Image (cartoon, rainbow, N blue to C red):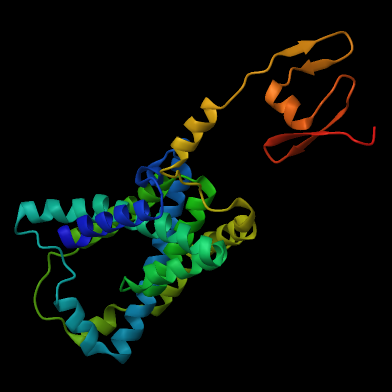
Length: 294
């Protein structure tokens, strides 16, 4: 548990502090969770992933059957002989892993890569790295892309964690309840169990939702940008600016509205009675300058 969960999160904590980022800002919750989107993304992602896995299973069963047999016999089945190990497996897969992977890949990596190379490259590269860490590389890569776009759309890492946790819960439950059989695996039996057309069918069904969703989000991802994070020195800057604030009174007459300028601003602009100023809005700031041509 230290190697797979504690160490990565500790590493992330050190890296975020080094980059002046508040670690807790990854867990900011700007709005309610969209459970409809969470369930839909989980179901369609699972259908696609199972379809791709079936295709890969078929290919390996007919090209590298001995490798597939060895891989299956090495322990893809959950050990249910120890109740504590079973509980720990479920907690690790359905709670700890989703939190760790989403915060690291969709939180920190996506932020840093977007800053260096742009958001679209960040989505692709972070998803490739995520995919290479799983046996089902193609399915995991697609899952990574959807998770990146989901995080950018909702700006809520808890949405990603919910999808990831639900996905792992379904996969782990299937493995748990389907893992009672033991014994030697026959290559002939393995090839008979593989079905290419079922895999293709499930993949197509999954793509019917995945392609439109990814295309729609991909077109606007550059404008939307990555979710903002809070910086360690940000609070100090805010407090400092608040200390230097000067409040001005607003006076309303029959013809106009006047704002009283502080003496510092009047002296800085060298304003005198009957002078004119220009007022411009630049992003979230009001810029006042002395008009010289009036």
